[in-house]
Image 1: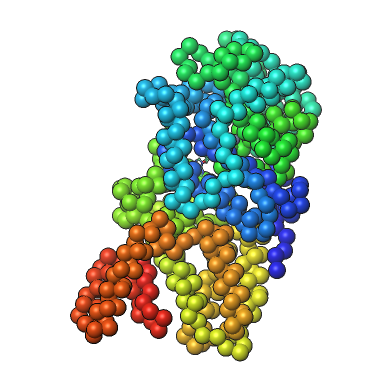
Image 2 (image 1 turned 120 degrees about the vertical axis):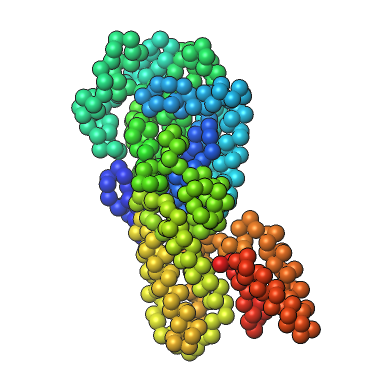
Length: 487
Ligand code: AMP
Ligand code: ZN
């Protein structure tokens, strides 16, 4: 049933048929968070997008090694290798050990991603755990004549590298334009050219995070960690590298240059970039404060919202946009998603009680092919969801007696819909997500109500139903017993 998967490759600017290097195994690296503050919803969108991509690759039967790093050193405030290390600065301001900052926000990051039902990566390496590997790469690049030392720091020589390779190939920038677009060096600068980037930085006296190296007590450049860790766990050439759109330049461009310098070839076959979540039309960002925290979304505790939203509803909202499209966050859009989410989930629940017939009034195989076609077309989740709604409107008709489905077709529908909704989109019934206590409580309440009904105590039975409805829980009595949904 599954046709070939096509992936939009930022490098070629086209959708390409996905051919992994090792037949059924896929190596995927995604740039993780810099753990110096809470992740905002924008960060979450990128990680949820790649979680969906990871899940679909698993669904297709690939054995995926999914590496997502934690940046716990080396990410400076400014992309031009200036300013303080973000973690070091936070530690200094809060008078904490940098690793206390790292621990706090790594734990927080995991807790948030768990609420969004993302799968953990296969390996989650840290920059500080790979200082030795990074120093080895720096030595190698120096030995190849593509990096130079300046006052204890080491810089990558972009123009020299560009004589044999194409710096700018990913972000479609020309080196001449890049040169003319940068400020002139003022003579005080350590770099030979403003395009050069740091592989190793000598630590200034107040910089708390530092390691010994052949050149100075210092710390690795931000771009280097991803080269070191991806190469260590996935090899010098691997299948997929992902991250948010804003990492294309300079971060990923520099990763390509480093990989080429060390191995003589480009490190990645398919570069994938997830688009931004915006708020008021502007990118959500830690530094500008134009962002929303997941906790604010879940509780509704913000001026931007008049109610809270469940993480799985927020995930559904994100899945309704293609991962390469910008998505603007608003209360209205989330409310619309919430409605759609309930429609889909109630439709799925109803599948269990659908009557079957000798013939199907729809070509079910075709309906299912369309689901796969959507995902095979560069993970097109909005089309997938639109097709799921079409199926639900067909099964609703079956429920109303206006259409028919055979038992075999119904079983096929159930299997594929369950896989797509729960395994691939990563959605969950509201009552399931981190809500075991609610499910347990509901079981108790419904047992008490059943006892009341058995004793023909309709007053108590109706009171329970009405009180539940007031708090947004709808119950429905059917032949198989009583079911409940959160509205
Ligand atoms: P950071 O911790 O800032 O390095 O970001 C972690 C990830 O979140 C990176 O892949 C960024 O590209 C991504 N990211 C940052 N802001 C947004 C946003 N507004 N929407 C989507 N992804 C974002
Ligand atoms: Zn990275």
